[in-house]
Length: 171
Image 1 (spheres, rainbow, N blue to C red):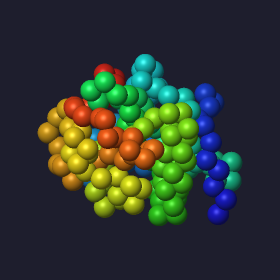
Image 2: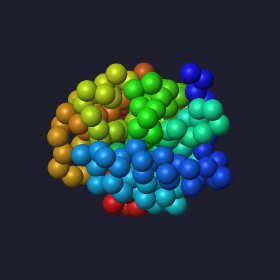
Image 3: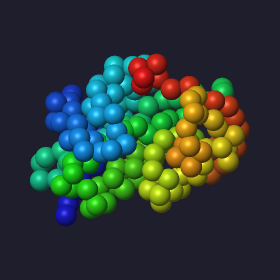
Image 4: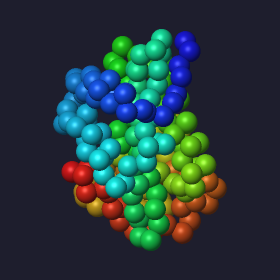
């Protein structure tokens, strides 16, 4: 299977909307509004075009990942939210490819770390650990196990401490 990971382009917006909507359509843990979240984040000051990535298979977008800027104390990090893969394409390592490429690009752009609120059995595969281990707190009540952080460069979170400030358009 030849999957291409590339930056999202303006002409991809409608297809990405559909992919994200489909990916969360039957998810029990979802508010089924992630596709609208992507649109809101795209229009926020926290949007990073280089970190809005799509996965293509046979010239069709089958996955999407978005990282946006967040603040923790005086530091700017990124937040992964959301990641989406079409249901029929899940469990084929597409999410893994999107996360790994996103982390690589983010590190090249100078971001030291990433935050995610997600499955505590999935994200640790990519180096995510409890954010509390780094002194990073969520701005709302959430399970310590599902609020995670990863260093994108060695020691990148050593000087980060505080409560995450998400983009205002995330809520």
